[in-house]
Amino acid sequence: MAKVIKDVGCPYCGACCDDVEVTVSDDGKKILEVANVCAIGAEIFKHASREDRVKLPRMRQPDGTYKDVSYTEAIDFTAKMLVKAKKPLIFGFGSTNCEAMSSAAKVAEKAGAVLDNCASICHGSSFLAMFDNGYPSCTLGETKNRADVVVYWGSNPAHAHPRHMSRYAMFPRGFFTGKGVMGRKVITVDPRFTDTARVSDIHLQVKQGHDYELFNAFRMVVRGFEADIPDVVAGIKKEQILEVAEIMKNARFGTIFYGMGLCHSDGRNHNVDEAISLTRDLNETTKWTIMAMRGHYNITGPGAVWSWQFGFPYCLDLTKKNMAHMNPGETSSIDLAMRDEIDAFINIGTDAGAHFPIEAVKHIKKHPMVTIDPNICMASEISDLHIPVGIVGVEVAGIVYRMDNVPIQYRKVIDPPEGVISDEELFERIYQRMCELEA
Ligand code: SF4
Image (tube, rainbow, N blue to C red; front, side, top):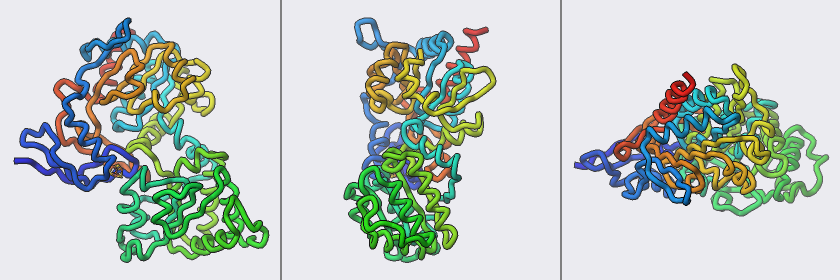
C-alpha cells in the first residue's frame, strides 16, 4: 500500500511551502506522486527517484574522464586539499540544511577558509542596507492574515516563487483578510510587464535602473512634499505616483516584497535603503513591512546560522586565527576569485559554474575544486571531485529558514540511494580527517 506523507516542506524556493503531500511506495523507496506543489517544486521530488542518480563520488582523471571512488577517498582528498591550501573558499549553501551549514563552518574555521553563501551574489546588498537602516519586517503569516495592500517591487513570484501569491500575499483568506484577493490591492513595480504585473491591480513600469528616484518620489509624497516632485519620475507619471502613494497611506497593513530587480539594479543596497526608509515613513501613519524575496529554500539559513556563530551573515574571512572578518568587495567570493586569491574551492549546494562570471571560474579552475551536490551541474563537470549527497527535504531531514526568517523543520520522505550520505555527515567526516592529518 502506498503511503501519503503530509506537511512536507518543498526544497526549492524561498517560499518554503510546508503543506506538500508526497505519496511514496510501500517500501518507502520511491516517490509516486506529489500534491500541493508547483511545477518547479515537483521536479525536485521527481528527480529523487531517477535511476541515473550519481551514487558514488567521481574523481577527475588526467585524461578528463571521471572515475568512481569511495566516500573515504573523496573525504581524504578534500581534507588534504583544505589542509594544504593557504586560502580556500567554501561557497554556496542555498540548497542544504542548517545542520550542514554549521558543520561546514567548523571545517572552514579549521581550514582558515573564506566561508560565503549565495547571498554574496543575490541579497548581500540587502544585508548592507539592513545594517545601515534596520529591517521593519514581518512573517508571511502576518501578511496573509493582515495585509490589504501588497507591493511586488523588482520581483516576479509568478515565475520565481510560484505559490507565494496563493499561499501568502495575494489570494489567501486570512484572519483579518476574509475576502482574500477581493479585499487586497496588489501593486507591481517592474520595468517589464511580467506575469505578476499581469495579475496585479496596478503595474508601474519603472524605467530600468531608476528605482531609487521612484522611492524618493514616494517618500516625498508620503511626507507631504508632493508639490515638489516633477511631472514624471523614473518613467512614471506624477498622477500615478500620487494614486499609489494614497493607496499605501490608506492601507491597514502593507508589505513590500522586493527582489533582485531592486537589489541588483543600479543603486543596489542604496535602493534597498530607500525602500526601508519608505517603509519607515509609512509607519508614521499606518503599518507597513518589507521583505526580501529570498531565492533558494534555505538561503536565509546561512545568514541565521553564521550570524549566531560568528556575528556575520556572509563573506566570512576565517583566515585569521580566532577572528571572523567580513568585508564584501574584499572577502566576497567573486572578488576573491577575480583577483585569483583563493587556492582551493568547495562548491556546495549551488552551481558556481553557472552563476560566477567566466573570468572568476577560469581563476578558480587553476586550483583544486570539489563540488558537493546531489546532481550533476556545471560546477560538478569542471571539478576535480564531485561528491553526491542526499537531497535535503526529500532524503535528508533538517532545519531551513523561510524568506521571513521563520525556521521550519523539513522532513525526509524517502531514503537516499544506498551509501549516499548527507552534507552534514560529509562535513563532519572531512573535519575528522583534517584533525587526523594535523595530529
Ligand atoms: Fe516549492 Fe517554491 Fe513552488 Fe512552494 S512556490 S512549491 S516552495 S518551488
